[in-house]
Image (tube, rainbow, N blue to C red; front, side, top):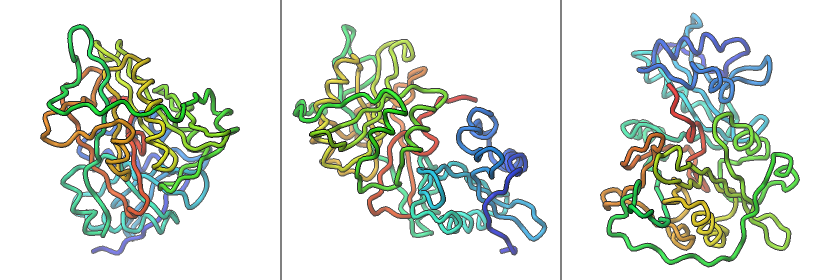
Length: 336
């Protein structure tokens, strides 16, 4: 293996990094070539370094790069890897860079949402966890013409969960700051900076952030996104894209989620998740879609693709780890 230097990017290296990715990746990535995506995900603070790590040879030529997204403000934040590219013939250098990323960033947790299934073995080689993301759903009521998106299969619906805790809409980033952060055993560790930026400042989608409180004490946040009937051309869909709080709160908001499903007239509520036990989801009223069970809960909706989508992920530290659809660079519009 050639002599390499592993380091974080420096201010002003954005152009060289994008050129390297375009020259070495097998497609032109909108994430780095559309300014609105690059600025949101990778551009550092004004005049600061872009969110990339680099492997370079002794001549300063880039051999590999990894773009990352922090889950919190400040040094040492947990991160999601978004882009990982190595020059032809230097896959080993790329793997060395990935293995070094936690140390370069001072991050306890490094994870990635939506990896290629064939690459799982590379992360297993590093001793990391890499596997399929589970998919959960709760069906609403079909329209007069029946199901237009979902295929229910032969799975019996779960009974309606108890209406224990209510969900209160958080109207603004300022209101979120007033509430603060709930206690949670989960990683990556998210903070208010992340939640404000991800759900109130994201330039493309509108999210609904909900607080679950008991006797005035904040227990959890749930984040949903409604895909309208106009977007799908047939029926709305409700997506649960994030949850911050202890596992035991999820069943307690199951009734409130069921009410959101009913009032939105959505055909189904769905959620991709790793790290929370399927039994907890069942208690919250959501069934698990298993590969080959005949159930279809479409993921691509604009326009609808009446098929299932499987996601795979990795994490270097599975202890307490959870992942949701909106983590990393996922849950964004499919722009070319």
